[in-house]
Image (cartoon, rainbow, N blue to C red; front, side, top):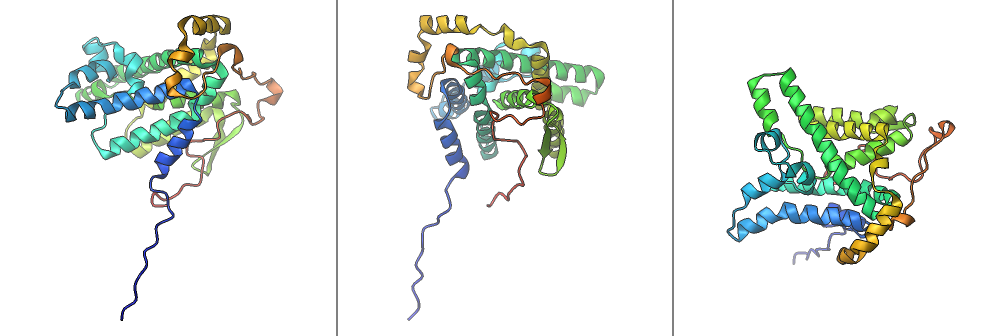
Length: 300
């Protein structure tokens, strides 16, 4: 008689990325949850509508496709504000990319919300979405003028900025500029100062993808502008934000999302480091660092 082979259940997680993202989402305050929820709803709506037999491609193009052809050609300005809430899901690879950039975003955005307060954080999201997309479109227009090759111009006309990746890169850049001369490591072996780390990520992604990652460079450049020009001062003051929170009843309206609403007067602004402290690592910074580990195979 042959031996009976007993099959034991695998101890490996079924979906490590999904479990990690769910764990991160549970710890997110309300503003970050609102962004993540809108991103999921807006990105998944075309699939749901197609299942129901409804066609809404033109509406989604007008609202979410931030490219020269749509913004400058068709004069649709909504994508400048709304493109960070959407990524087209036409394949499994697109879905994986959406999950990846969402996981990166929720690693950085909660810290920014804790610093600003939830209401001011929402204002920051609007300003940075519009600003980074504006820089993105200007970079594409400038490239078209400098390299007026027809194929290049046609490709740049349709190059889009979509998803919260740009917001994550802005947070990473602002975090790096808090201690610009501190050491940073890319891919575990390339050492540099933190102020160059975001640009190095853009260069590396461009090499890996075989094309310029305009969205990444636009976000990094806008973050440099934001820091240099101290644009935080143009956000509503904490006192004004507190009054608007009470008047609009925002904490109650968004309570269904769960999480914690960070009142403007209870947020924790990050102290500016003194000149003699700028080489000290920031204990409040996000522990997530892009391409900072040793790496693992996809099957691990």
